[in-house]
Length: 275
Image 1 (tube, rainbow, N blue to C red):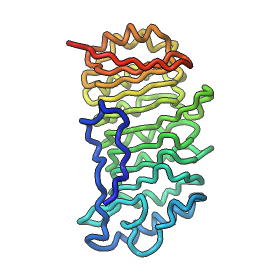
Image 2 (image 1 turned 60 degrees about the horizontal axis):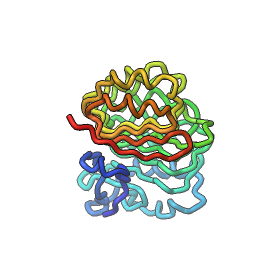
Image 3 (image 1 turned 90 degrees about the vertical axis):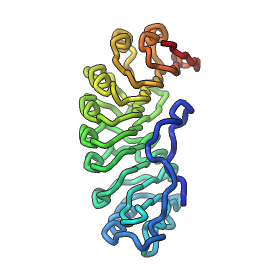
Image 4 (image 1 turned 135 degrees about the horizontal axis):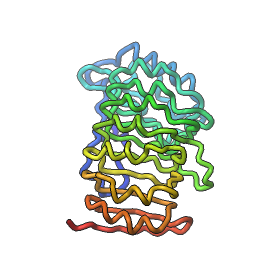
């Protein structure tokens, strides 16, 4: 068994369960599904793998390959976790043949110049989607709002040059993710989003972790924070915003941890709100 699913970084998230655990390889109960193996090989062919990260992708049993996790009864591929693979190139829609996929992690790769594929919104069983530090560009597709079972979404794309290449023009699609517990949009340009407050507020019964660092929200976030009804929130991360947020945010009584950076000086502050 291999541990592939990267857990949330901070201890405050320890109690949240996104199904990140041991992957039981399908070869314990037989070979993988042939159509899914072919889909993965087509996906591999479209990638640029200069580090030979996918060198194990040979042989009949795709469940034994690097980054692949299968259900140990049905042998369907349920996890595709290729973080830190230094992969680039294109993401082929052959992945749509992985109909039982629950975890997709392409974080810390180099998909420079391409958009997050719209077809990612078709993985109906997905509960975990991590695309951070993968250098995607352009608009985040609204189709992600179709992932009705999603609990973890990380699109963070840190770029301290303030030239944010990944952007959203609306967050209304996210308001449909009623099971979402973890949302990280750090480094995603939200300057054109006018519905961010209402969309986030609609996640009030589910969201526990919200990271909006360096999102170009500095001009309008202060007035909204006191009215946010995030009853499940335990962690809020805000960076590169006005210092007045530090005062206003204390009105959100459910928050137990606040991390704030003031412009280019790192000021990590933790506050516990006692009810």
